[in-house]
Image 1 (cartoon, rainbow, N blue to C red):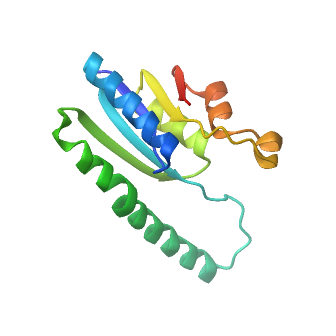
Image 2: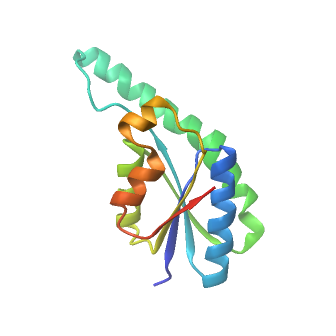
Image 3: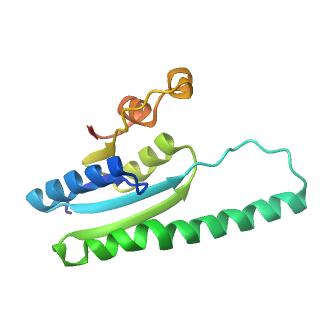
Length: 144
């Protein structure tokens, strides 16, 4: 079984740098590249059944838009690279969901970009990169 490298991708410049790094690494070792995008979604809700149904529909629409706007273009961009590519598009807490994806794929490595921004929320609740480095089931590379 070929190794897999999971790369978190959100379309930002830092995620492009992470994707380039992960693609080069995957090419060098013959690994499969798993491009993962996670839409953050709060698990807390106090909604009526009708509101929950509407929320589920919005979720489905957002996943479809993310597939068309983020994942499909990057897969097309890498189509001629000779890489084996898989994709994952999920909802949830970003770091926890990337860890779950890495576990499901038995990833040898997780790659994520770092924005270099440090705002109050990341100081209070932790950054995605910092959380991922602490809880990931595989070595994590944070690309500056």
